Amino acid sequence: MNLTRPETTHDVVIIGAGNAGIALAARLRRDDPDLDIAIVSPEGLHTYRPLLSYVGAGLATLRRAQRPQSKQIPAGCTWYRESVVELTPAPVSGEVDATSAHQVHTNAGRRISATDVVVCPGTHIDWDATPGLRQACASPHASTNYEPTMASATWDMLKNLRQGNAVFTISSRNAPCPSVGLKPLFLAADHWRREGRLENITMTVLNENSDFTGLPRANNEIDSRLRRLGVHVRSGITVESIDADSRHVTTRDIDGNATHWPYDALHVVPAHRGHDWVADAGIARPGTGQIDVDERTLHHRRNDGIWSLGDAAQLGTASSGGGLRRQVPVLSDNLIARRNGKPLAARYDGYSVAPIPIDRRHLILAEWDRQGHEEKTLSFISLARPRMATFAFDLFAQPLIYWHRLLKGK
View 1: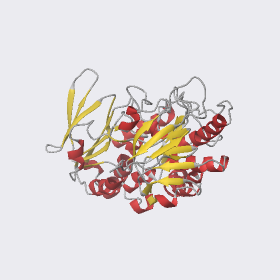
View 2: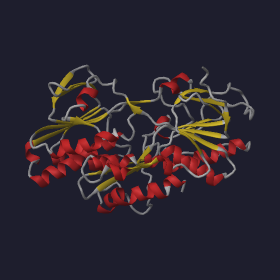
View 3: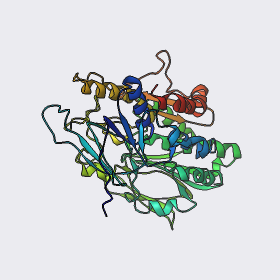
View 4: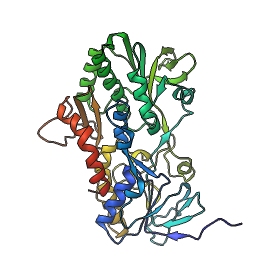
């Protein structure tokens, strides 16, 4: 019995329907309403992921962070609620050949052909990268806000801790916006302070990165706050394994020395990896698993008509949802320019952002470019200092902007 469906053809196929995919589809529809655009993604729910940290701190509900995916697909786009199992790029040529097409194969046996394919399926948790991680997160003593179904469990774990060791790990291995791993620490510490428990809890951060953000001013603010809270910080180490039975994390430093960190509550920013079909398609950069695009034009370095943005792309800067604000218009402009035989003139400057609440009233908004220079949204003020206004904006205003403007390509 042949389950292969007839080939369908579109101008543009977008793989992934997260922030990157939906915002780009909406922007392309606005910039060129004649484009025939298809979106391939199996998820029935769309999650506003930045809100998961607040779910994990008891300040928001999972219901507020999720909406039906069918309501987010831009009008005029075709949605295939299927998973990609294979991507076959068109043969590499020295010239743009409008007749050559890429092939996207789905788990429903569908073959979709397009001259432009945008690969933005994000990344997913690599549960096997850290031995014991899956077993630990299945217990009541460990959790991660990077898995939507676990965000509420994070708050249950942290709010019920009365004494002992609270450990927070931050991975350097393709984790999207890893600095948000500090959110549960600061918000839980403020809760414990209000409850009179803070002095009974020892807090430790195990950071595989050398610092927390790409902006020195913000790092100094964060370090100062951590010192005042008495948090033990170890940076530049590797989280090697987690033992769920004895409840300890094993790290190894650059000299190969192992250290065991006991925990009563553990929040993990886990390692992430790309999808296997991305590697099989030969479009990933060796050693990273992320898609090998030009960091400024977002077009693939070797394959004409292959594009990427967001967590799946190798962009030379920290991955963040806020960075898509700059990436989406760049990719839309360049994709349309290529289709019209024009140069790729739009450039992504590497802008990234990390919102870090230091308590339940104040937030640091670190913004930087690829060179580590502060890139201010408001030219007259630095948002890298703790402010009540930025906390309120991040928790209340930003989700509304996300649903009603960013996902509309605005």
